[in-house]
Image 1: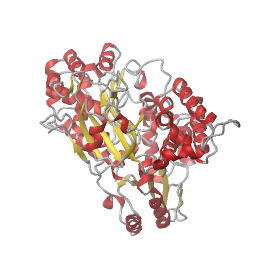
Image 2: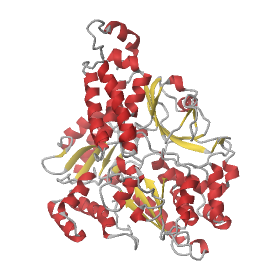
Image 3: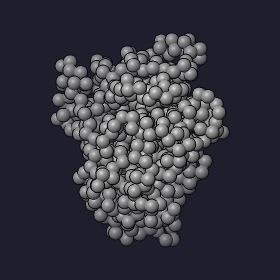
Length: 589
């Protein structure tokens, strides 16, 4: 069973930083966070019970009511919907006796919906006691539940998700999936020195691979310039964007390169402490990561005087998240790690100046650290032989949906959308979502656009945080948009009004479209609210939550007007439904 028994804490960690771990302990032990537990933790941390309850209620995987001896989380992503979610949900309800969102009368099974669990290439998928079960169907669900009733632990019958690495650049040009030898990057980093490390990262043009694409060397150099001590390195492994699973594969296949990238960053900026914030959905990888950290310590690459270098002391611990998409935003992640609700901070300071515990902190994601390790290992000159001159290197993209080869594609920068669609054997694509719901909607007219990290010409280029979801002409476009909107509405922390109210209003407008009662004023308001949210929301979730609606309306405007009956609010010139619908019959589900 996954445990936190090996979890360590650092001398700098305040008592509050242990709260998430303590809540996990009680959730596992009692299957929920009871009123007694809240009282105990409130006394221990010398805060009000309301504050503890506020933290526990913020996270999806902490329950204030019993969640069953065995807790099932069924993925509700749009890809799961199209692959048979409803049939699988019904099968779970019939087999367990639990209705979705509750426990059965005996308290044996709890059945709950959850957002994307990083298994989009193997849908429908679920977590049972946080062990993964993939490619589910009605028959298999019945077999699984029967085996659990007979006393078989989910760990004994769970799946081991395939990595599905479908493509890497030929001629030995893969950056991430070449053979890895622990310590090579560290030894070269120690040899060339701190300033040269940052120069190597700068020459390679490495930018944040989580979607923001901020130059990594600038972040590291800024953190290095502050004299405050100690400093902290954090790996953001809270990969929650629906359709994205590249970090899952890297952590499973190349965890060493991720850890080594963190160690190199620590040497470059002078950091002492490192943390991996692992999303709760990936806790089936927890023991694997802990084993990797032990191997680094035994090799003398973590701890005191790393690789025999006097004064280079650095270690890493793992913090387990508890199900909150917004914690992928770096300041919300910091709040969570300090034992609070994962609500984004106001941007008075950047984390490199005042991050974890107000200490200088570098926050990069899994792929960024893995890339940094490989750049130091092979050298920036060799790295720049990949990609195109203006954008060197490679990018990992998770491809899922209506394609025959869903999985991981490591492509060189300069690869086109069409090439990736062809490699994955996309099936009659119509609606293509890049970078998850918060990204951009494409059509086949965008086939010639190329992937690069810094897009200057949007008509020719596109940035991709890490996922590409393909939907064929058979799919209902409005169903896709409504699923994305439901995700953002649920995952919004609710702190800022534009995001909290905007997502709710967008949902109502989309429902009006679905019912055929919307007019052009409603379409205009949909666009207006997406712009309001983009301009005035506090964090990236609110700023990008309206992207699917806005880009879909731009790409498929006539589809919405015709297929879903949006009409002119004009008695003199009524909208001609027949003329509007005819060209778009092919798009109907």
